[in-house]
Image (cartoon, rainbow, N blue to C red):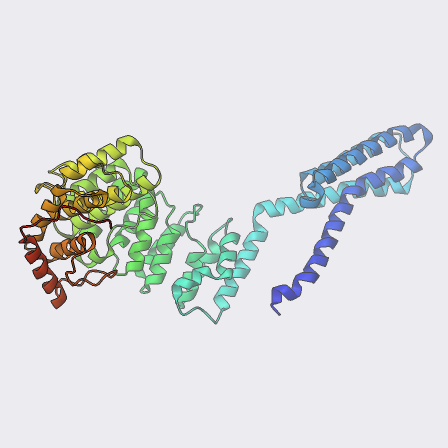
Amino acid sequence: MHPRLASAPGSSSVGYLLQGGRLGLLFVPVSLLFAASLRAPEHAAGLLWLGTLFQALACLLAVLTRQGWREPAGPALIMLYVIALAWLLLGTAGGGADWFLHLAKAVLLVVPLGFFAGQCLRDSGAPALRRARQLAQRLADRKDWPDDLQAVRLLPEVKALREALHVDAEPALALLGSPRAPVRVAALAALEFRQNWRPGQPQMVLHLAQRAPEPEVRAAAVNALANLDDRSLIEPLADFLSDPSPIVRLAAGEALLWNTEGQWDWVRPAVRQALAHSACQEDGPLNLGGNCLSDEAVADLTAWAAEKGVLAMRAALTLGTHYAHALSAGARPEVLNELRRQLSDVRAPAMLRFELARLLQQHRELGPDLLRQLLTPSAPAPVRLIAVEALLAQGPCPEAVAALHELARLPNREIALATGDVIQRRFGIDLGLPRGQALPPVQTRLAADVARRVLLWSAQQDVPSSVGGP
């Protein structure tokens, strides 16, 4: 049997006992006032009975609002004891040697003072800090760790430590000196996206990130510093956008690009360097973490997309990701109009026009007039191909078929394969491409054979007058 299941009945019994004890504490003041009213002289009993009635109503209100069940040691309970003490002092102002009155006053004074002291202790964070140190020690002593270091952050002990660190990060920082990588990853995972740091603590994490040989440790350290707003820390953190490890680059993108509105100037040089880095070209777009870029960032990426090489390609892909987020969130009409304007602009970067055409077509935001405008030779070949297929999907279109013949004659094997895919699916002509599978690599013999067949098709004089659906 699972340990949690085995302990469930005992835990329930303890919980009921605690609730009963808490509820009993609520009725101690009214009980003492009731007993004092019975023992008081006749001339003083009236005021004590009035206090007892008032206290009973206050206790009943606390129970009905369930305050007595949830927060018995909170301000409401302390107030009940203090009010009861005031009634008792007022009702026995004439003095008296009754031992019970002295005992009742002591109880009504000491109990709330004890609760108040406990509340102050909890507010100081000392119990949470003690628990955090205990959890950190358990992680330091742990022997069995997941083989995948990235799975360490999902451990229940790590989640518990993260919740216990709301006062101070010191218990987790004490683990950063461990020679074992899983312990360091666990400590950093408990600090993910932390907002409250004490002076010098973020520098410790950054220093570890800069010298750690394990990519998982560097990635966890980057995530821990994701909520910083200190330029002196953000700028060196942005260097991890060009880290040799893909998982670190992915973490850096999510950690740094969520707030380009306020931090773009700090990370801009590092972003450009990372986009142009030849070792990162397989990464595709930057990881925006589901966020949109600022207007300044969009302007810079648009300018970079007009350059050459890896920088232009990845800048265009990143803009595509940004605009995809904007469209998914419900872009304003002026944003859509701007995207259509860039798409139809012959001076816009070819890679950017292709990303915009693909994105707008996915969201069904390309009208027939704009699609026919994209059939002209001034548009990049991939954009023309998107327009051709979109028009053919709507029905017979001689202009689209004519543009497809032109595309089939281009001396580019990659374009030939994409064109052959459209011909085979829309016209039902078998060009040798495997159905329902990805296009073959351009260097293969199959790709060469398909390109030859596409060229032969383009030489046909009879252009199909109608086409079928997809």
